[in-house]
Amino acid sequence: MTIIEKIIANHSKFETVKAGDIVDVFIDARVARDFGGANVVKHLEENNLDIDDVNRTFFTFDTNPTGSDQKYAQNQQVIRLFARKHGIKVFDIDNGIGTHTLMAEGLAYPDSTALTTDSHANILGAIGAFGQGMGDKDIAAAFNKGKIWFKVPPSVKINLNGKRPAGITAKDIVLNLLNRFGANSLLGYSVEIYGEEVDKFTLDERITISSMGTEMGTIIILFTPNKEVMDYCETRTGRKLEVIRADASAEYDDVFDVEISSFVPMVSLPGKPHDAVNILRAKKVKIDSAFVGSCTNGRMEDLKTVANILKGKKVAPGVVLKIVPATNEIWDQCLEEGLIKIFKDAGALVSNAGCAGCAAGQVGQNGPGEVTISTGNRNFPGKQGKGSVYLASPETVAASAIAGYITTMDDIPAEPAVFTVEERSDRIEKAKKEKISEKKPTAIEGRVWYIREDNIDTDMIFHNRYLTITDINEMGQYTFDNLAGHEDFAKKAKPGDIVLVQKNFGSGSSRQQAVDCFKSLGVQAVLAESFGAIYERNAINAAFPILTYSSVEGLDLNDGDTIRVDFETGEITNLKNSKSVMGSPFSEVQLEIFQNGGLF
Image 1: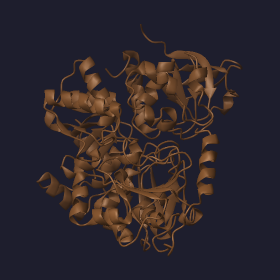
Image 2: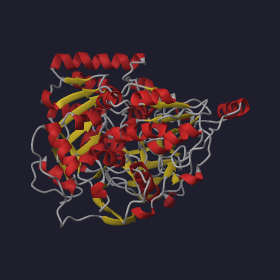
Image 3: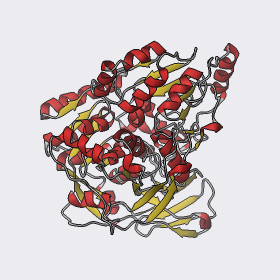
Image 4: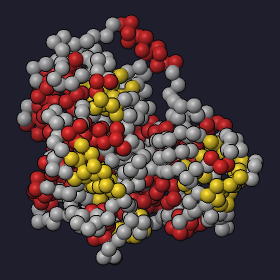
């Protein structure tokens, strides 16, 4: 078996599993964050569900640890009261990012399983663990039953061959992989990475790479633990652990040989994490702000590197540098080792540990016309504010903050670039003018919205500024209001409509609202070539019909045509011309949950 197959088999009633099997998986750590956690509580209370094992159940407050938003504060208090009542451990606002906490507290370890409302829970692949972000219905079910159904994903292997070039960071490595594989060519796969250089990767480097598996569309990126990782996990758990590794005879859907020796320093251009290019393409772009942090690059190694670059230097005039450690333990280590003083002396703002701007609940957001260089994992339009966000390594971000423009650590100018008043004003004015852009029937008919776009992410579907909304009746009005060209969708959509899109619909966050907003409007179904893995689960569990297709070219379809969709056969018909194509019919599980009205 592959690594993912072994972990799932070890947590199921089966000795072996294979890709495509749907099994109940026992979950070692069941976690909800302040984002989504209040909805988990709501599902548990409304369905009169108890807690299977409070010693395996946790809450983590990491998306808004500053308590700067009244609705987040309200949701956090709802969770605290529920946790007190049931004796559940809360890692509160003084703790840091939940997925990092699971590793630091010994709750996640090689060959373990963990669920959380964080779409980057697959970061746990860095230590050879199965981590998955899921919607609030799934998490509530896991709290109650201790297990959840899961479809064993197919596996691929990536061999990184050759020697790692000097100066190539872990962030550069994952951006090179994004450039190679894009956002959906590995969609739905479990990815294992191997190579002589890979064996030398530190824990922090593995975390950086695994954390961006979500942006590559993968279920998870898994590493075979090396001695450093095993020593760390055994220290944190306080017990001897076994290394989890794939069998020599394991079968993979594909094997890719990639030359790490050809990797170069990279940045992701604004709008798409997978639009990663050689940094030379973006060099000398003036910046307004810089950000170091997130679950991808808020580790101790990252912050030491930044401190080494900043020591004795100043952030460029007019540039704001924001630094957010991943956990409070790391924050304290920065304080003890003098890094906080270096950051402050350089002119940086240092915040308490947490997710920061990625979750829209802490420092890191930017404004219209603002150009930011960030160590985060996402730069979708509107995700980190209304400005433009470049993604890069901590080294590049620190060097750019000093230079006043995007550059590398070996090319920091003696004098920083400074914006003129006119340049700033022109940029802001330009930004203001730009658009941000009884038994249920198993066959439906409706007017189609044919949106010819790939990679429509959850921030485009339901923006993070609305995440505190828990009433489904309020959600519909915000559907697609961050999708350029479709901001008025909610005003024009009618009950009974059907949405048809292209590849990788619903990539990004684990938010259930990105499904429920369509239900709120009365949209009957969404059809796509492929769906983000978490979005697919959320839709199925909410009994919201989704269906995949290979091609609709045979339909001669136009926006506004009326189509018929048969969930049991997968047939899609354009009623205007009677032309049909075949999509993928509902699985037995999907049909059962659909007819049941939802997972509960």
